[in-house]
Length: 209
Image (tube, rainbow, N blue to C red):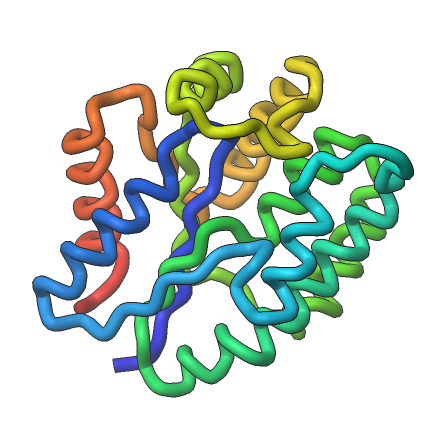
């Protein structure tokens, strides 16, 4: 069986990371060879870049274009060192965030030039696209409240103003509307087991295991 890249996307607190773990367990129960990874931070170099990108530090702030380039660097390394080799081996990859995150966060959220973002994504991925992207549709304010209730320390992105997160939410909606064949909407407001049921239905209907 050819390898497949399944990406989990959405606003902060949408539950995608938990659902990715549940999806991995389900696929393994079917005898599928599964790899889980994330962006940023899917490689040794990526772990260091993730720290730079997400840790809130005093002093010099990260400029928006610098942020964009760091995410692109993480992605380029991730594609070459992790994604391509595993796909070549026929594995199913579950990835927490990929190119759509950059479009939603740096494009819609930061307001950076969309043409530049698409160019950088093309360079970083070498043309690699997801087979299926699961978009966890959830109101940004609800997601942030979930994060606060979890007790986790908010990272640099999570601490942005609500207007930023609402722009990101709108970005995902527009991406999904423009690419319905690749991006599948998941209602993330439901109970976890119902969210997982949606995921399993989408993957069963769109991929052959």
